[in-house]
Amino acid sequence: MTLRSLTPLTPDQAEIQRLARDFAQNEIAPRAAAWDRDSYFEPALVRQMGDLGFLGMLVPEEHGGLGLDNLTYLIALEEIAAADASAAVLMSVHNSLPTQMILKYGSAEQRRRFLAPMARGEMLGAFALSESEAGSDAASLRAQAVRDGDAWILDGTKSWVTSGSHAGAILAMVRTDSPGMRRGARGISTFIITPDLPGFKVGKKEDKMGLRASPTVQLIFDRMRVPADRLVGEEGLGFVYAMQSLEHGRLGIAAQSVGIARHALQLSVAYASERRQFGHFIKEFEGVQFKLADMAARVHSARALLHAAAAAKDRGEAVAPHTSMAKLVASETAMWVTTQAIQIFGGNGFVKDYPVERLFRDAKVTEIYEGTSEIQRIVIGRALTQS
Ligand code: CAA
Image 1 (cartoon, rainbow, N blue to C red):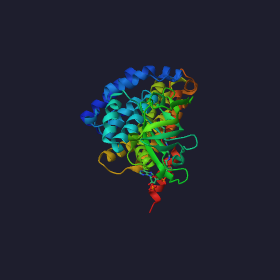
Image 2 (image 1 turned 120 degrees about the vertical axis):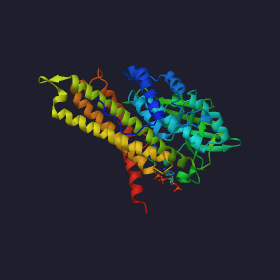
Image 3 (image 1 turned 90 degrees about the vertical axis):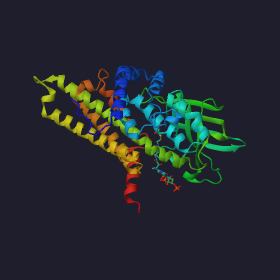
Image 4 (image 1 turned 90 degrees about the horizontal axis):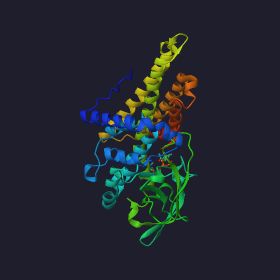
């Protein structure tokens, strides 16, 4: 038996949850193991998600989206993650980072040009902040833009870009200050990059431990000429936009983590109910029951914190340290719960014939990307101690 979530859902939220669960279980779950094995990204998935509205959940209807609230979006995202964490990160990054950045900081023309095709799944979004030498210390990034008449010339290499090889709109953070007068975090600006720009190249595809069906690539900007109207918002505010967007993105990663953890719990309960040792189903052993109880308590705690943060955000409240708390708790829950799941499965948890080893591999990155657990602790610690 799976314990129900205590979050009260409106009829619309329950309907979206059912739609996401049916889609995830019918269209994604049966193929997730093969996609992971082959490290295969399914382009049709983007179009299917777009058709269902899942790639424009937070985009207002006037721009072709569903115009839903954060809580509804995160409930749907948990369902996708409970089928395949790779599909979930595609949906999370797309909805939380590039579409939100264009919606909040983009010009009317940028919103008109990009949001509707992104919401329909015709144009996948990506977010390019990190570089090989600028990970947690994101403000130390070095990709450079230099103004040249009605355009900017961009040079540099961005790393760890989720969906970067298949994206039609990449929100890239690059320096626009001059090498002779650096302005730190205030010398960074955001541009909308499209793959048709001369000088744009997809670099190395990472061979990852988990999330293998989600392509993570380097993007190379080689004297790439970017029209001036691709600058998002104000010059010099790109780092602030990126940080504000990550506050949002981290809720998506928390939902992805809850979905992974919930899936591992469900598989563990089912396995413990059919596996017999010493003449008993292993679920009858207190040692296994205690593990399942702790797993369930942590999944529900993580979800409750996430939903509380989302609901507060939907009420228009500032939720910065709480989004980091939700991401921290949920990602560490996903790692812990998937580790317990492997222990319950024993040797069968250690081989690819059973799905829990994939969940364990997928869980790890949730403690790393969109800010490591250590970065979340820094954000929370600063909020607690700032005067
Ligand atoms: N909202 C608004 N402004 C913010 C902000 C926020 N949440 N966070 C910082 N800022 C502003 C600050 O106010 C400051 O502005 P001033 O210049 O006016 O003072 C400026 O940004 C610089 O801020 P800090 O001094 O706090 O910057 P820092 O260098 O100390 O870094 C950090 C802060 C929290 C450690 C930040 O660097 C960080 O979050 N690092 C992790 C980066 C990260 O999450 N990367 C993930 C990449 S995306 C990804 O994972 C790939 C994917 O596709 C899934």
